[in-house]
Length: 301
Image (tube, rainbow, N blue to C red):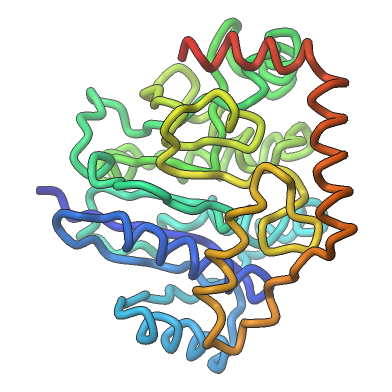
């Protein structure tokens, strides 16, 4: 069995959500233990203590890896979030003994067993991932790929859930290459480090079933999601929680209830709930073509 780890990158603003992400994985691991890592961006000692207290409360261990944004990344800090940039440098901080690494965005929750990811045969690839939502729209996907310098007719993955053969990443220095691409082309990358990673791994990654990264737009078409990814600006812990994720808010409320982060969760008002439902209904009715194309692509992938 390879030594596995799960990692989330977070600054203080997303720290409660990041810890809930790690906890959700712990609850959905039935087999051998893995390590839980948090790449902490410019965290103060008291903020690291909050992470440690959260971990103790939930009978787990979270190892905080301190991180400061390098000078070479500061040029894009105004356009990209600190967590986005940190992912490009996480290879410099991850312990050497880690062989299989599951990277998760902080707006992700595991909702069913994920052990399979730590034993999955990656068929010689250094990465496994799920198609991005944009792949349902070939004209948009193609334009994006051409702009950032990918090959024609390739696939473009969503970087919210990434399964790495971390030994291979180290040996091939793939993250060093990604940083070079970032420095060369960051002005072309509207989708942040996701674009840079797609250039690095272009045509050289294993496609996973959408259940392993069920992005918000895919939820109606995935029968048994294992990992939910709350893409978009509205999140379950906000008062403007999207209608499709309304039941997920309770996970954050319960897990953060006895911590200093209890106020992180905002409950929508009744009027807000009604408005959320009407917005959801309007999008469904107004985007029937988009829905049909998404269903057609992801139901067959």
